Image (cartoon, rainbow, N blue to C red):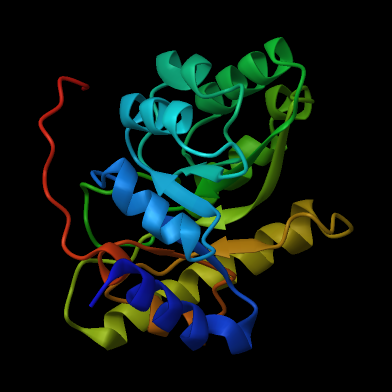
Length: 229
């Protein structure tokens, strides 16, 4: 099936839940992204800074770009002028650099705290205690050019739906705890980004507000050689 057909099928499926769809376009060509754009998609996610910058330069400027991959502090400056949401914030130093670069660009950058819920050491993210320590810190209180609007997490890459469900439930519980303790009267802290192509249906059941779907829309991705570390 075509990208357009796949995209519309996903949109129809999630429509009753008022969930934001992030089309994960990593390794996809300009023409493939444009097909999704012409079918009405405006939010795209990338996981490599170099690829993100190149695509942003070539594609329509009303696209909202989300950074979903691990972000090194020294590369924040390349996306700070245009990024709509950084979903993968996993440390205070990274938040401080985002704040610094946002200030240089005279803007406030929205961010999600990436929390670790998977039973996989290879996945990045803060545990709940680390997140609480970050939010309680004086250094965090000084950051005026970032806005935390929720949390993001990735479940274990497993065929076991029970485990995935439990991990998403854990992320929703983490979100509720942080909301109650630190963002109780802040309406903008409302996003739970969880769910990808293989598990977004479970994520929706567990309260996701934002799903990150790639291969279900674009087909299986091809690996593009890159020198980026």
